[in-house]
Amino acid sequence: MVNEGLIKDPKSFITPVPHHSWVKGKENSDYLENRYKALKEHFMFDTIEFTREIAKMKEWFPLMMHGRTEDEVMAGSRIDRGTEMNYGSLTEQLYAILEKEYNTKILFNTEVEDIDPDTDIEWLLKMQDRKTGKKATVDAEHVFIGAGGGSLLLLQKVEIEEKDGYGGFPVSGEWLVCKNRDIIEQHNAKVYSKAGVGDPPMSVPHLDTRYINGKRELLFGPFAGFSPKFLKEGSFLDLLNSIHLDNIPSMWGVFWHNLPLTKYLIEQVAMSFDDRMDSLRQFVKDAKNEDWEILVAGQRVQTIKKDEFEGGSLEFGTQLVSSKDGRVTCLLGASPGASTSVKIMLDVLEKAFPELTSTEKGKQQLAKMVPFYKKEVTKDLFDQELSRVTEILEL
Image 1 (cartoon, rainbow, N blue to C red):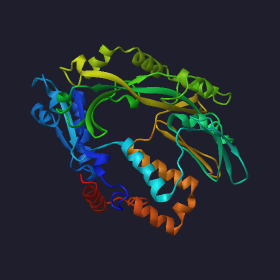
Image 2: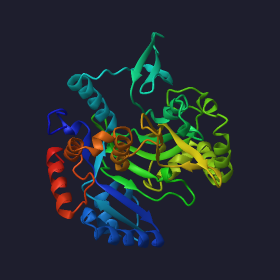
Image 3: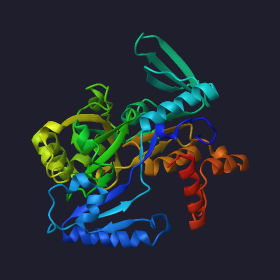
Image 4: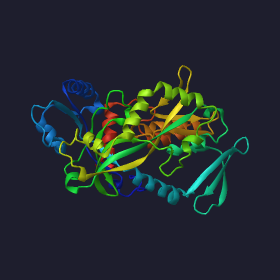
């Protein structure tokens, strides 16, 4: 889209920020070195670096090395070509392109209240303007539900058997956000460590340089909180309203077989500000309380689905649910991250619009948009595309 002139300034949504892994202790350091050696053999990761030297880590992330001594055992790895994405800015630009270039009608402050079959080939969406209360309807041959935490409640309104058994458990994401510009300027990196033993994948702690509204910021987290809302601006009745007869066995099975996760969430919710600052001091030893504040980033709803052995299973990825005929597709679960979002949306296209992925014209269009689609990714192809994208996005 940058190449086509649809997005004018790539710096408005993407910025070079190196990505790192960092661990403490001999066992973790040995693991990270073995991981580095394995990754370096692959052409996609042949630029990865590794060190056990404090001096080198001072170059990579100096803020984290304040007060460290040479006898501390730690290790780090680095991918220099990492980036920081402002998905809020990019999303706004994508909607503007849809409206201006493709004359797509977009409704804001509008709630979908029901989705009913209208004919054999169409769905009727019943909507209400949240500001004026005005009702409206839309006929659609295909319905895609990509409403983040609100997806489950919408899916339950659609009369398809594939929805049965799905439930959701809401978890809010909280972050420590730095208020001191001098400290923010000392860190230009994304640094991930390891989740605690038994902690869920979403809990991997990281100290993160972010660019928000054009300004460099510094965040640490994530911490889990609890709210019965499925969206940040949702209703306190969302969790209760999501419990139906068909998903009670799934919900109970997940609770009974995931007691350690329940314990983790209770511990997270019970954490005080000082407890959170102590976690940050594992990364920044001299972090001061007055330089940081806690902010709620948003809500995610972990997907619960039927499991024949345990009643229900808790899914940490993104689930694609679709009707047999593909006329309804829905994304459930944690919002898909950068590493999986393209793959998930291609899966949606294959389910919902097979004519786009099976015809020659459709294949050509997808090959133009996604050069790796249905291809073996060779070193030459990877290097060629990486070079092209690096230049276009001014990285």
